[in-house]
Length: 377
Image (cartoon, rainbow, N blue to C red; front, side, top):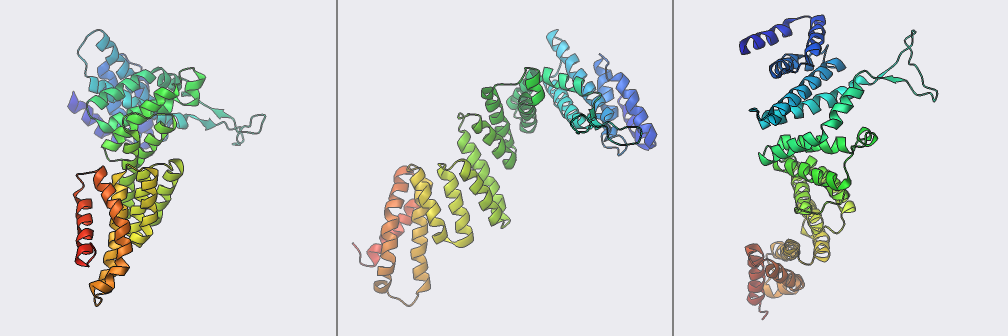
């Protein structure tokens, strides 16, 4: 059976353009089947049509794939209710595919009506008339399976299938907040959407898709979500994005992104610290100090910011030594003393907030040693 399906798929690729759409039309008739094997076969055989130039932009292709996938999910769901053996992962895959196919089909189904002269027909307000063929059925299927797609997201989440979990949660949140969900009275409340957006962003974070994660978590926070260390996750996602930009020497791009994040979250000390880090890489410790200082003001318990201030002051003092190799300790000390004196309380605060910070201890010990070496008790 499997070989025959594969041979059929190979033969499809050899058909001419008209044969491709002819096959899609034949498969469309079978997409309403209540037989699991027939529906699975439809999905396998229509796969080449999804990328074929002639059929890939035809709504019937994606409608057929979506209808078969939804049908397959529904049949497996019935089997599960009747306690027949069925794979949760297969059900999840079928429903995820169904959503993707139907979402692709929707914009293809909205086309402008044309008159006999080939000109667009117009509404009374002057807008172009739009006709649809499958949209009502597509929207009904999408909205009626909203809870199912949320449950599928939970299945993927429990199995640590992060990419599919993110897709499922994203599908749910997009559709549960859509205009047609509101029109049908099935839109989700903000509290539910906020939680779903968090798990979408959390899943995206796990696959290191930091840009998507940042924006999903941002949506969750704007909806009022505050649990599960969401701020830490979002800030970490941003930090990883910025690091990639900095690795590519895209300093302006990194700064623009950080500034937008700061505008939305000005009391986030980590964002100010990241801003300082970016400035330090580009222009040195002196340029970074105002941002590191701001981070300590925003959050007096943020140990890393206190260390960064002390470290930058230490680096400025060290540069004085490097730039003046012929000066004696006696000559250097007046230049370095103000920087060391300012750095010490910051480093002491850093070590008190984080006793395990060996780097802060090392810098502080070196400053105290230099003080003693230069005759300051």
